[in-house]
Length: 174
Image (tube, rainbow, N blue to C red):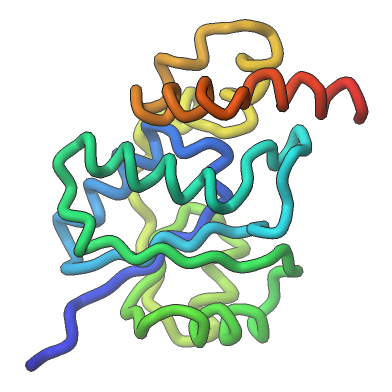
């Protein structure tokens, strides 16, 4: 039995937004399975990283399930905060099931994973100016319309965990 064609998508997913969803669905058209790797998994309750790794995985899975994605094609994993260099790329590659490619638009991530031997695929941009975690978190802090930029299930989870209030408390400490 042949191993499935598998790609890695590495991100913080703070929060999982419609851009992430579009990239994931785009990638599922090209690969049998995806590894969604949650970076900075040991950080939470800050302005940069307000959500825990578990919450981010929950957001991803609920949003994908709501979109009809077969979750048997999705593998989730986490990695703690680390500097970006080729040695850590090898470390990450060994944390997850064997992958053929990494899907990223980040030039530094692309270079280190390329140097580690992975094929690098840049996905379409999918309204990158709108779909940025930093912009969505800014809208949350300003009581802006962040909900239109995340899947409905993600908004519901953020509400359930008091995510906006958490972010505002974190901002008041920074």
